[in-house]
Image (cartoon, rainbow over all chains, first blue to last red; front, side):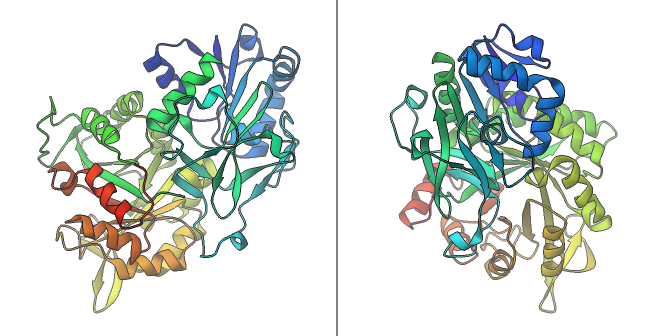
Length: 204
Length: 251
């Protein structure tokens, strides 16, 4: 069953609500032990990089996640900061990330923009898929998703980019490495596209 | 491209929507949850709930409402009205609000902005500013625009940004209720001088006003209440017109 990793990050309820609307079983795991029978994992995300990583380390979640994701190859989807911690490191913090997708998290630089930008990147933006994938089935890319972030994921290899979005630069708004998925936007706040994405993830 | 946001605002009293709402397809015109669902289906990008009740039960009623909205609505929503402490915000976010908006409490105690940002992050703290022009100067007002302060709009907005607010919701009391359009000159100045998103509020009367506030006012988002509640403007039509005017919107 799908388990949401509870490391004190917000927006868990929003994800639970959507799976409830979809009639798909989904539970919150507040300890590493509660992850043992999971078949899919979701890393939700509101918060800062180091704070989130520290919580994963202290709670013992990281060791169990490594086992499930790297050894058992269970599909995992990180959202927002939950996506950024999939990287190896971040400009936002000093701690190492989970490193499931090779990359580094950078801050939006106002030098990229022709006109002075407003940071964070906040609101609805389209995504441009760079490859076909079942996780994007029936998604309206133009209609897009709700974004709210100041840092972005910079993939080491373009191979790991699943979709890009333009905000001052074309950056990776969705990443993928084998069974690991990361979404920079908030599908739990993205109306019908978001619901569809959670459904697709459940069907993987 | 990042879309300009259209945000209907719902006034809430004792857990019910106030101001006559003219929706024939509503089973219960006073139910904020049902109205929120309709707006979200029609293409609203976000919602704002402004609680104007003044009862002792207020906090509990509002928290319950937030919980019920979050259960049904899959777009971001902000809750404001009488929020004055870290505890108030904690309860609302726990119940599923994405952002909270503070107004008078921030003017009375600016440190509150820093405290909220430190605890919850910039992304969920919106500071609402009501202002009107007095002898050519934009003066910040309290209590729904009734009480003037000594604060200059632009100076206060910059301080709000410096203290870490994630967004500013600017209502021009001169324009509010006039249906004559938004305060675009002041909005453009805010948008240019600040680095955080600005939501325009007050004055929406027709679709052209929205085009103007995005182009002339350089606003990131536009908020309105009655034109949506009374169906004078349909969100779908509005977005189509904005798109024709080359303004990026989510359709």
